[in-house]
Amino acid sequence: MDRLLRYWNKNKKKVLITIGIIVFIFIILQILNAFVKQSNTTSNNKIQINIKDNDNPTQSVITGQELPEKITEENIDIIKQFVTYCNNKEIEQAFSLLSDDCKQEYNNNIDIFKSRYYNSIFTTPKTYNLELWINYDNNYTYKILYYEDNLLATGGAGIDNNFEDYITIIKQNGENKININGFIKKETINKSKTVNNIEILINSRKIYRDYESYNISIINYTTNTITISDGETQEDICLLDKNNVKYVSFIEELPEYDLSLKAARQTNLNINFNKMYDAYRIIEKIKFSNINLGDEFNQAIEIIIDL
Image (tube, rainbow, N blue to C red; front, side):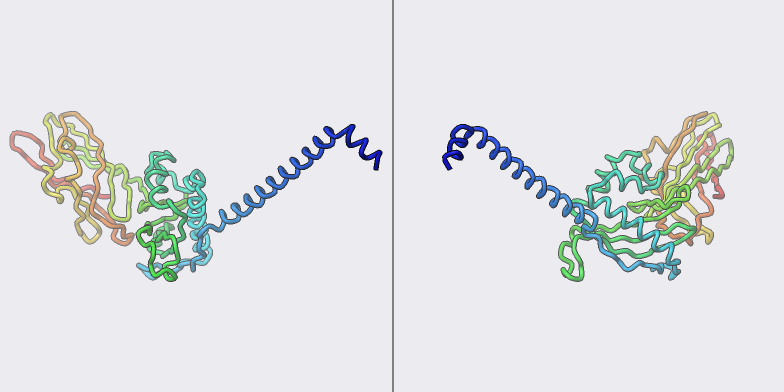
């Protein structure tokens, strides 16, 4: 005992420092252990966060057509992956699942995608319900309802935070990609016609859930200023389907100066048309029925282009 007391009195400072170091290391280890446990818990929640295993919809609610099970599984997998990325705030990974054409809708800018789409829906984690809407020409469009809670369990509580969208799965370079926010697809057309020295080129169209948008170039080879419409009648520029049904343009969306074109000039326009997506109502023609040549006779001509 005396020997122990003498050692303590002689080395008290060193002993206290050693004990302090041991206690400090123990505390640090406990903190790190708690952090690792919390990180693992967060990681597990991250994977499973509010993602519901929906019944895989295999039948179109519009046409009644059935999809093969393999295609359905592939489609559901990429949609689930997209929602999981969004719920986990992995915005770059979610953006990478979009097709190139869909990325163009956001100017290939992930920040625009975040502000226009992500921030509108994923302010809180979402689960979803799916319906197969239309499958046509290897494109598969699903109606998706994002919501926070199980609507049946909550009686519709939180419905103000629900969001309806249409997601289309397409093939891009042999790989599944998605189009979101009601954007169905983009098609290259490259059809043109020249009448009375007026050339109209239909470059491409974008098909959305609620409308179609055509990119059109017009070249005026005349010596006069022409107008493609007076801007007062939507039927001046319209689409015609195989049954000759008209789908009028939203011509009022264009500023007046876009409707006229000086001599020897070219203009490029995006014109929207009142046509909801219906894969079986095939657009065959686009008609310009009131092109004024601006000549001394105030002559108007019609140009119809087969698509």
